[in-house]
Amino acid sequence: MPALRLRLSCRFVLLVGLCLQFLPSPAFGQTHTAPFASAIDGRRDAQTIESFQSANASTGAQSSPVNLQPGIRVGLNFATFGGDEAETIQTLLRGVPTVSETDAGRRTGFMVGGFIVADFGGLLALQPGVRYIQKGDQTTFTVRNSDGEPESGSITSKADYVEVPILARAELPEIGAVVPHVLAGPTLGFSVNTAADVTLGGESQGVNVGDDLGGNAISLDFGAGADVETEAGTVTVDARFGLGLSDVPGLRFSAQNRGIMATVGLTF
Image (cartoon, rainbow, N blue to C red; front, side, top):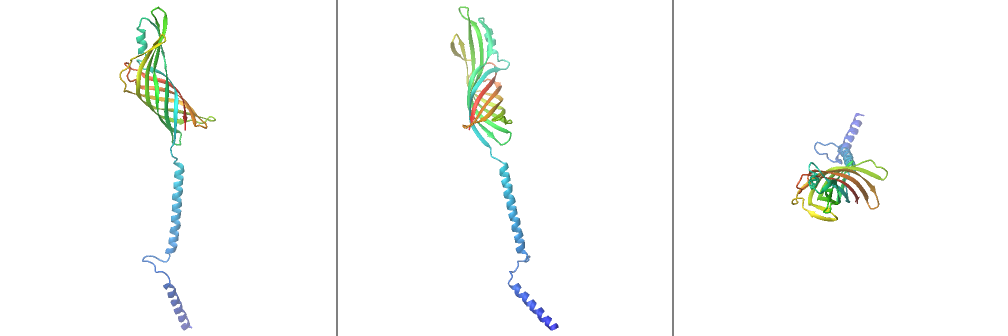
C-alpha cells in the first residue's frame, strides 16, 4: 500500500506540473488574480464615467444661457427743469414791465430708441439701450401789446440728447396674461441741441439761450410697466420718471432735467 500511495502522489504532482505549463507566466510582483482585479477596475471605471456624465448633464440643466430679447420703443416725455435756478426765465420775465403773469409748464417732447432685455433666468434682468429724447422746459406768460391788450406767449427751452440708459429690471407676479415689472438705473446723455423758441401772437422765433454743445448729462430713470404676449411679439408699456443729476449742458444758468416718460415698445 505505501508503494501504491507513492505512485499516486507522483502522478498527481506530474499532472499539476503539466497544467501549470499552459498558464501564462505572471509578471514580477503580480499573481494569477489579475484577471479578476482587471474586471473590478473596469466596472469601477464605467461607474466613474457614468457619474461624470450625470454631473455634466445636471450642470448643463442648471446653467441656462442668457436670453436676449431685442426691442424698439417710442413715447412722449413731459419735461421741465429743476434745481435752485430752474425759475431763472420766469424771474427775468417778471422784470419786464409789460409782463403781467408767468407760469411754469412742461415741454412735450418725443422719444424713440432701441433696447435689449438680458434675462439671466432669475428675478432680475438687465435692460440697456440707446434713445433719442427731447427734454427741456416751457414758461408761459401774459404781456400787454402796443394797444394795451393782453397777449399770451411762451418760451420753450429745448435740450435734446442721445442717451444710453442701463436699467435693472425685476418682474413681478403675473396678473392673468399681464406680467408687471419695475426698473431703475443710470442714464448717460450726450447733448445734441440746446436752444429756445419764443412764441407770441401766433409767431415763433428761435433765440440763443446756451453755449456751444458737447456736454454730457447724467440722470436716473425709475418706473414701472407691464408686458403682454402677442403673436407679433411682447408688447411692453411703461411709465418712468427721469431725475437729472447734472446741470443741463450749454445753459447760462444752473438747472437739471426732470421728466415723466410714457412709452410703448415691442420685443422680438
